[in-house]
Image (cartoon, rainbow, N blue to C red):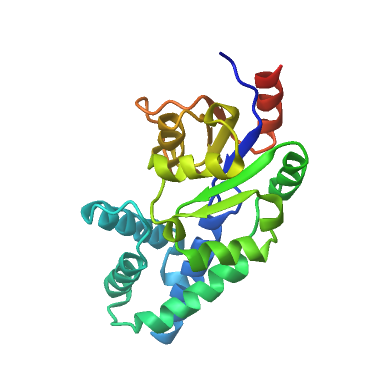
Length: 242
């Protein structure tokens, strides 16, 4: 039986908001400040390369800890490690981290099409947000861009007590939206969290594979749809409901 799409659930980070660019800006600014404090010049360093190495350390450390939820402690330890390697200094990580957060919060932004699309969709469909992350971080982003008014429900993993891809957080969204799972399409950038979670919950899955997406294609994870821009979802819904 084919169901019409009546609702859309969306991930937040790197689906609606450009979190990776903001995170990179925060790292480069605070690391540049450390370089100057160490009486060196930024021209001696390739900050883009150092940032990539930093993200690799963070990722590997999460894998070693068998943690799929974001750990601020791991991110801090990784920052200390990369600072020691390149600058040979011991840093006050809490002070640096406060500056880091201020920088990424100042530079974070929606993707250009995000606001237009969710405004449009919210007039025709029920919308839900399902996001993994710390409550303080996710609530900051939601409030900064006044997103809450467009959504029938917002589920943040730290608040909910479970995270994608666990079925429980998807099931809660369908319950709150009062729609069958087969009538919902879920859009997110992380196949292991968003696609697997939706597929296991009988929700239509859509992988948003933006330019420079960190997550590579995996033949074992099959989304129902793949898009590169949120604007493409309009045509997919129209075709699905035709």
